[in-house]
Length: 304
Length: 234
View 1 (cartoon, each protein chain N blue to C red):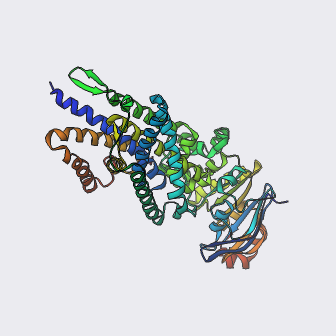
View 2: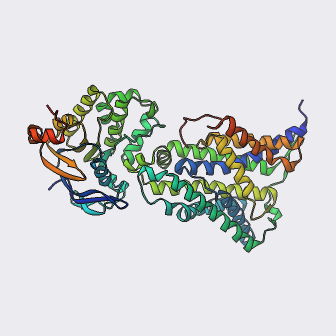
View 3: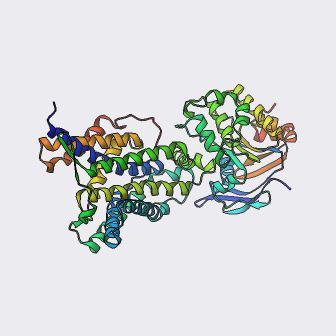
């Protein structure tokens, strides 16, 4: 019989991993389509959480309304982010420019700039300290599962993530916009020749990815009960690690690695101080880069 | 009136001008071949027509409408499709997915007709496009364009890197597609294969069209054959 303590830690790790997974999907989608790292993804998560806080304090709507409003807001954030930080660097449309190194590097800088401006803006507006969310909204009511106690948030986060993941797989495999996203990801020039509106497809991808990022932000806020302007940094890094471990452009790979990361951190805190738990992710990153430079699941799969 | 009429098309990449005022027309149900060696601007011309490059000057009239500054998806929606250089298929997706994407708003309405033209693609429909042979990839590339019900098909070097036997079967198919009412603009280094199916041909050199006329005249003029077509058309 396994000590209930470890099961408890596994449950905590799993819900942490699911959060990383939600973040990692957005990262990976955008990387798959444009071959660029969106450094502002962590801020989308933060802004999603703050938007939820403002909405709750202003109107106190039901939980589902908060969630859907934040998702919609996240999509709008993705739209704006693409327009401000990515579109201006995509002036030409032959294959050399669409995934060029120059575009990659300039958008690295522009998305980093957006991320800094947003974070500092939030600190000016709200202060850098923790903001507490109203107690009624928190998703931390305990649920007894035999020897393990989880909270409602674990279940909700898991359910939301499962729905989002399933929905995304359906979208990518079965719908026209999903096929367009995969086509742009596989071959942007080829996509132009078959009449896909690549700009619209890229914007849609940003909207989808940011929607998930913002959703993760508000869920985590309600789970822990507190949010702060720099809250997106660490999950952003973890999602980035999961993306690299999963092979950069594989969504299932990133999800599996995000879960692995969360579970490992959950278990690690039983052996090492929780201050050192972050080292697990960085350790994984280093090991992956040294021994599996193509990611844990190898290369040659479909992008996205 | 021609289906496609290019007037004074000038294309520049940065400061360097690649095409200097190209004039070319493709009549309804006609096949026009553009010949010439590497680097004379053939692919640039084709990319400009499909909206990948935006021209610096000139016009491209398709059914009388100037498409020269439209985006590629707007041009495709008007029925001008291209099987581009390098094929540009979606290698990590299945053959069928490539065809579905090619169908665009027409979906799979053309699937039976296209599969009848390329039976081999029917056998490989669940296979990754990247695992097809070169000839099959070229067929997929043409089939993908046909899924969108084009009224004109542009082909950029369909014979490149293929065995002579495969080239012949692809050109036989093109003749068959034309007999169903499609116009074709084909760019080729393989002058022999292209002149065999084309009604008219143009020879490009240094970003200009230097000779244009019925393909029989071009193929029959030894000086042209010697100077521009590698000396071995017959």
